[in-house]
Image 1 (tube, rainbow, N blue to C red):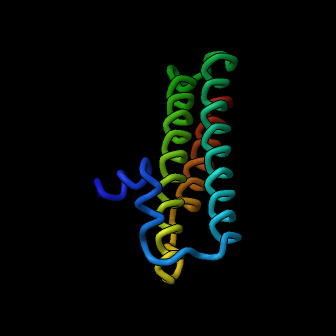
Image 2 (image 1 turned 90 degrees about the horizontal axis):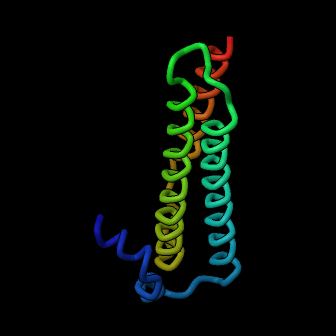
Length: 123
């Protein structure tokens, strides 16, 4: 695990694995990483907006729970982005299939559940 986290900060080590893939694939991997970073920033911004602009809801502390949940989800999304970028880059360099990811489904599920909770809180 520590070795993978180390590669987040030292991309030269990633470049030393396997052979260099077609640059189009590496750039596509980077664009996907940036899209996940934008998603993480948007979710974090949503959490900050909830904390600052939503009036207290009928259920005590629901606003704060939703805000903190969104901020943590945004942080998790950003961390997952860098981990997935490294794993995909290594797989491409080794000529292996790209790693499967459950994170998009988990993210969608958490956002859906959070939306239902806020809907109930607003009622």
